[in-house]
Length: 155
Image (cartoon, rainbow, N blue to C red):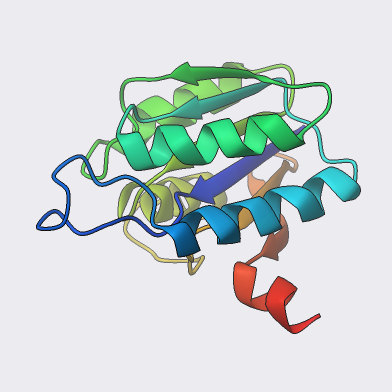
């Protein structure tokens, strides 16, 4: 089984807009990434997001591009400072590919917890609008691939 960890796209600063929606650049980069994973045939049964506007907007863009369109759902425990153990439990209970749209440092800690067993060892460098695909190995998770908007813009 695979899980896709996605950092939300670039968002406006809190000074610009306290709700922090995606910037035009953030929206374009997420659409670029979403188009690429759609073309590659990536599928997710469900997309979970933190409920913060920037994460919800990112999840909705991804869902629009993926076919069949996955369910988009707010999930508690995905905020920037939440304990990654709750998300790890949800991932390990899933029986279909799952996509999680979230924030740093939570995503970094979650990836580290899945891969190394410790949330404190950084093992993946996330980028806004980027995706890291993890695959379930024997007893642990492995990085299968990663995709960032910079890679797509140079190809």
